[in-house]
Length: 254
Image (cartoon, rainbow, N blue to C red):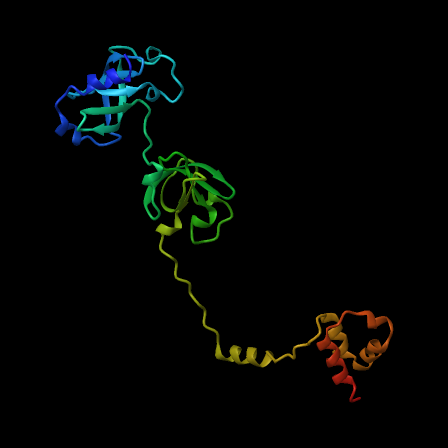
């Protein structure tokens, strides 16, 4: 029997109102009524039996339906899609994910379990296709050296989704986003110490030269600097025009 025969067999019921109340991912325990080349019919306690396609029998590829299920066998199935107008229920024997990519949104709060710890953070199993990552900087407001100071493998934590990248299959989570921001206590300085700091801070003249070591020598020993300027060896230094004017204006009057 092919796929068209399966559809006609399932579509013979008149229970569209009952099918409209069934939601996706609903769990049923049913009995295999019939096996075909395209899949299997499963009685789930409704007037309309469910259809399990051969690709939904298990994760690994299946060549024959009889290799996985047989008539009269009790199986666990989940609702994949429902068509009330056609009186059709599509089932799957592969347990669906608790959270699909389209269901994960930024800002939502999820409970998960710590599965792995790394130097840069912790991986949290939230029921999605891949676990989410809580970076070490998103664990707490305080400074920590390693994620093991906050959580351990197997701990159940509550996290908030920061961002979701479906192309890269990445889910960034945060634990400190659900915590209150600690209030920083600012210490007041004494007015006497503030006055002292003002006295110590004096205005320093900006040196137009690009080299600090040359500026220090020039300010400490002006006569020696004039000799360096006139020497033939120091003429090859790449000084700016501004620095040359500064030298001439500084030492021409002397």
